[in-house]
View 1 (cartoon, rainbow, N blue to C red):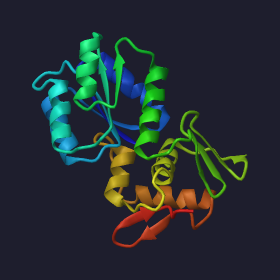
View 2 (cartoon, helix red, strand yellow):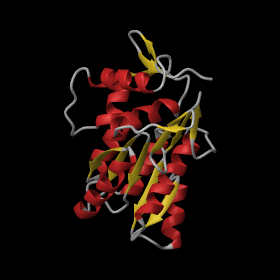
View 3 (cartoon, helix red, strand yellow):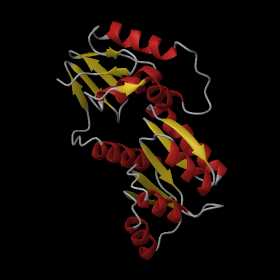
View 4 (tube, one colour):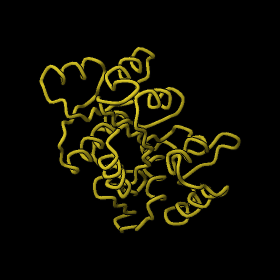
Amino acid sequence: MRILLVEDDRPLGEGIRTALKPEGYTVDWLQDGASALHALSHESFDLAILDLGLPRLDGLEVLKRLRAAANAVPVLVLTARDATTDRIAGLDAGADDYLVKPFDVDELKARLRALLRRRFNRPEPTLEYRGIVLDPANQQVSYQGTPVPLPRKEFALLHELLAQPGRVMTRDRLQQALYGWEEEVESNALEVHIHHLRKKFFPELIRTVRGVGYLVDKC
């Protein structure tokens, strides 16, 4: 899952990115509102973590412009503005959730998981598909009751596909979900990950749609 983090406090931004990386998220990080608005308007993210007190363009204005453009990306507002009026303003501007600094990292992770469940209309905390059980909270996967250890990229890819069964995911979309802006991507890296997942579970798990991308068929 790909997250855009918009936070101008460098130590906090580094800390959030470091904390979320082991959870299977790809975190792209920006430090001003204008750049964030451009990225959210031109690229695909599963959700955004948005500070309000940003340089160049205030986070509340970013949120208002996103919603005015009918951009429905889930947004978790993360801010030191703790007054009730500020929370109301953020929620009324289109925020999906609101977390006040300082915060507990485990609570942030739980709120992100809840936002993703709502986005994909999935009330259950785990994903289940033809004997596969994927638990995002514990970063664990099993197949027919047997644990299957997965490297971080393979876990993230499996999560991305199982969260939206029946939807064809383009190669570019999957690469963005796995690597973001700062990582070098070898030309065949995605195909290698898909080959490994098919081998660890079953060959029909991920179907290739030639010229388009990949999908997990609906059960």
